[in-house]
Length: 308
Image (tube, rainbow, N blue to C red):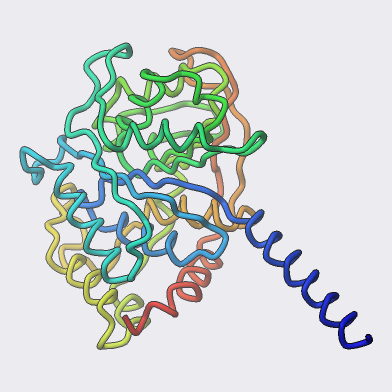
């Protein structure tokens, strides 16, 4: 009888533990212009390695403003997304293809597999739960989803990486690469009443820097993931700057946002009003990050993929 009671007690504790783990999982979709640069790959690898995240999909995004972009830049991102998921053995995460074109108006969506998947998944959210959309490139896919079906607004939470922002004066400078790849889409999100909008500004994320030496040090010689990241680092033409021609360091813009979502205590999220040219409403902006602790988190979580 005692053994039965102990067994039943352990079973209940096990079930409660599993339910707690499932409840803590953060459902999210990453929307990335992965082939545009380097930091998207680090961000995707980190998101996949985070136990708190339930990564449902990685959408591909265009980066047509880059002088290195092909006529089908979204497919460049798509192929790189496929490559990193294969290396990390995560074929359970789907890869919806995004739009290769930016919006031409705030009333005409650029329909794609990505925007359709956002709509479909948002409607599957349970009452009181939101789908987290992490935008590491232009806002095209998310904005298109909202234009087509505005009923998803209350069901989503948007995290966006972009815009220069002065927290002391609340001044916004939208002359930034991600913002420039689809300015109409960004304006739509800022003007959407009731949209839960969280911004990791370029001003804040620029402080998150990796050196090539520390990346090489932390990956073993036979790591496929390490080879992908290091080869990308060494071979990518960093066209936007002539500083540091040997590429000894790299700003991990996108990774800062992923780390902030994974560990809220490592980032200060403050409330501000939208830019004066936009619909006046409150949004939240990350104004401070703990770079050292974020780095520790990255290397700690990525360690288990080091031998792949």
